Image (tube, rainbow, N blue to C red; front, top):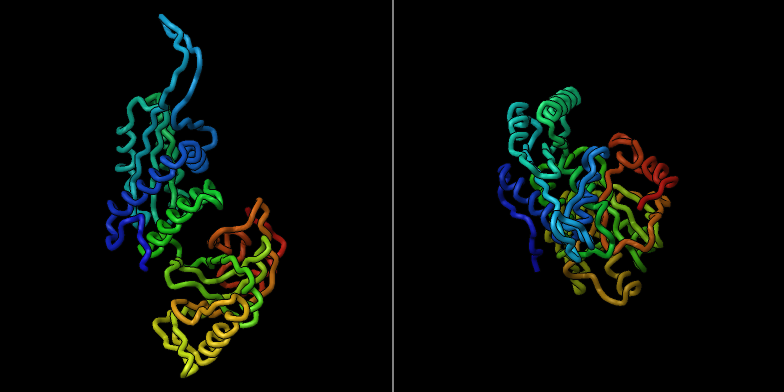
Length: 339
């Protein structure tokens, strides 16, 4: 069964990207105004105090009476200017400052696929500051990439918030397919492995049903017992079915050319899975063929395990980059923890 998408596909126009981003914000707000408030607070200057959502109070005195209870709604406005690159016009952004009126919270977001040039960003911040001084306003200006939005959103999502996890993963997939996320950075896909982890190491292989969608990643981390125990570079992702009679694979699709070694390792892990799992994975699965799995101990600090896959940028965690080896990534992660 094909996956139902939360976000519109097939178009790369800025208005479609903006609509999808607004829908993402709306989903979080309707799920929890408090989480939405914390999400916004994480992306704006900490000196600006945000109050989003309803407020409940008792016995508040007005000019003529004291009602037993009061429920009020804080007003806020978020204006978003989206670019598929980062070619913002200064005049256009500054003109957007005029769209704010008497809202209690005012935020202008410049959203792009690539970060601003530092000099341009500092110039814009200074001009917004001068506008605020001249007009006695308090408009927060934030320059974000789509990757920033995804990371800030994920920080507000718990492992048990399955619908929100599904929503942000679909937005991640949309951004990746639309070319809105960085391509060169080494990206780690962390997958929970139970009884299969010995087979994962032995055959340098991870498998998943074809119905589970994945966004682009350069490396895969096998997770078990609250830690990533090994990472490897992804050499190929192959969808294949196994024919018992012919003892051979029917290759349905692959990201790269399929080698004989990869075919044999897929056959071997399919056969082993019956013993390991108690059922067969010979049909309806895709196989992540890995280079050497380097052992590590990248431990999860927060309570509980992970209930699904996770993505992380290795360079942001370790300070290393695409020129470093997987062994160096593993050694660096070995001394780190994550939430």
